[in-house]
Image (cartoon, rainbow, N blue to C red; front, side, top):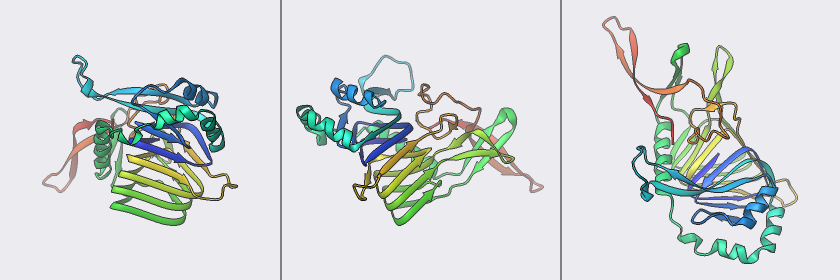
Length: 299
């Protein structure tokens, strides 16, 4: 899952999506620019539909109450999701045949502001990653303690040949990754060596920018990449595959999924929630934990 408060740029030979999900005011899909300040043009929508890409402009309401509509409570994004494969060559051919439309799509594109409300939600979710967490299914008396782990710095720079991670990679300013192969996977919760239908996507946040360059392949399975600007670029030989894979297991209730209420794609909901605890110790030295409140899921 990719979400950016300003722009997502994907520049790869092939984008493979298996329940992939991208949300941003601007999406640059292998050179095809989509923008949320007006509806997606019909020729672009038709082209992407032939590739099984679900695309559209969506309005998100950030107001918690049911008061009359206030335009300041809404932000518009372009959303892409589904299971599909689309190559840069196919996109380039479409751009060549629709030059005038592409010129319109690019007009004053750099003047579009970042989505303030989405960025605020991303920053709140970043803060949650910096805290120890307790998840529980109270009906079945199951508890998971998730301590803080992973990489947390202001600027995260990773240069490596191969990279495989399921832990958070976080940069308050930026995350820069240069690698040949990259694989990121989420974690399914386990009880007595048995997986259950809930888990945590692997977070990868560069609050201002996330730049990922790979020379062979990049595979993001059950991974949440967030920030103001996200760029994923293939830097290898044109004759190589240069595949970027975005995949999500929709049979798992991903507890840190900010779009868990998008039911067409995420139908599974477990009884597991995140709780705030009050931890105490009695006069005998025995430790107790009392639930203070349920922490709402990320938005």
